[in-house]
Image (cartoon, rainbow over all chains, first blue to last red; front, side, top):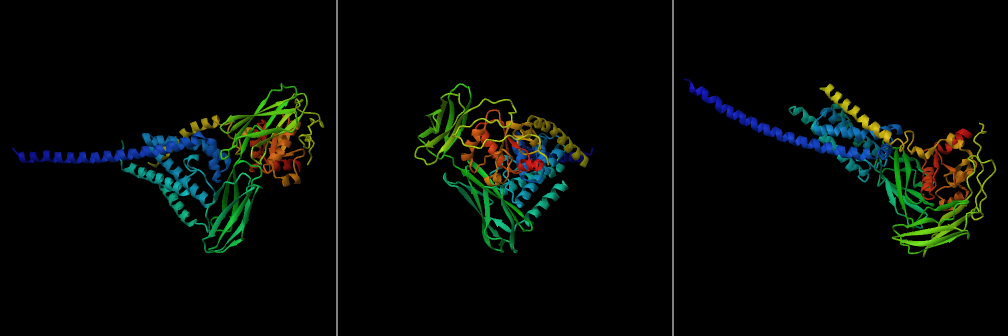
Length: 167
Length: 248
Length: 142
């Protein structure tokens, strides 16, 4: 006989489900944007890794130019780093071992940026950056700007990951 | 995630604090010497933007062919100056990169590497510049390819042999290329000749060597025996180096 | 969470080792792990001496250094007077000889440049750069 209480719940249900739909759409949009960023950054690292991996002899020589590491280590890194970059980039793009991939790529960029700054401070003429010999004509400023942009994107992805629902 | 942030911030601080006192206008100079130049000179200008004088501890070049001069040993604050790097080209060709390492008593930037990049223009490229036949080989002709450098135009070249033992014929291969066919009279005698290649209207001459060599003997020739060398190619015969017998 | 991250990173680091090792094997002849010059172009002092008379020693240093001291029997061939010295060198060369080019210390570029020009311009094979250069020879002979 109490019809009034029954009338309430349906209205409430309609409202809350509308809210849920809106926030779902918002979530999916931001999810898509983050995924796009995953692919963009991943793509950059695959490109950079491939460029260096195709000519490890030249890359070893480029690492040696920084005069930070002994030659045998430069050779080892010349073979190893491109593959590390590629696998981590794939992890980023296809969401496997995501956190590990993100932290490795971040570490690589930071170390690389520090090395570039150190070289500049020491007055060494470095003709290449993360893009191997292809970036040899870039200035120090553009190298630094590129590195910092990628770093910022990686940080953003890292922090966003915590807020995202596990998919 | 904490460590990368820390390292990043540290590097930013380092970057700001690492401003060197001696500021270089450029640390790489590209030169394009003319074909007959004997030297290529690079000027590396600097200015002391710090508050204390800077002293040059050492300035030295990567090779003996380059010398570097500072105008002064001490640079007072605000002063400008330059380091002049003189690269003696010699008979070098193509892209030459030479460096000069400068050491100062600055607090944060003790070593600076100045790079001199010089493009040496070459009128003719002679490949190979050495043709030979072994004694007893068939006296077939061998080809020397001449390629004209991209900034040059050569319509005609003249080739002469220093001895009549070899004959040289020039053929225009078009698009800045020539072919020289070299043919020995016979391969019976051990002889050598210098081929002089001269582009028309040019003072510069290029050389190639043609030789009939003796047939190589057993791997270790007995001491003292060396192939006779024709008078056209003067040189001191190499004395054999004994592999053992060197005492401390 | 931290362990998950470390584990993931470790897996990636390990997986990348495999193709890296593969590439290192594939390129083993193009790169020397000991020094920055291709291995097939270099020769140690012991190997060069073992060649005995089959070796021609080529001094790539400037004239004044050569005049002061050089490997006995070595020929001077430097880039300062290349056009003049090359024909003299070619007159002494004969087929089957192995050329050992040296200059002062491993990091000097002159011997590599002279060796490169002998291979490219005169199209000679068996041109080698002496590992350790003039200093290595001095150590063994003085």
